[in-house]
Image (cartoon, rainbow, N blue to C red; front, side, top):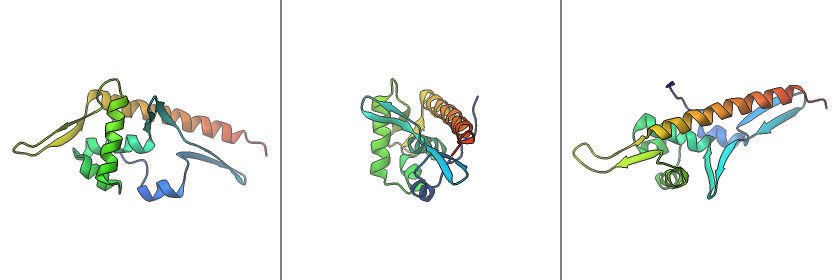
Length: 136
């Protein structure tokens, strides 16, 4: 099942709210962040997955990075980290030629994006459930 992806956050919002998900009850807020950790550190998190979605949308790491107000170098380092940690490449790049190079998600990349957002939705439901039970 393929779904149209849209950005989950704007770069400015990312800095304003350190949590990926939050639930308010009374004067309290239950916050949480979910990511997938690999042997070399973070493998996938909201920001990395949005970068993958933008690469799929624009066909370019450079354009994806610009859309997120991120340097090309940082975006490339994230893509390199993701590909090194994945069991198979999630992002493929091609260079040169008449039409220039490009970047695309592999089938494994599309599956990883969809799988992450499925986990994220379950995580948000968990926070909502637990937030509703706060008794302070």
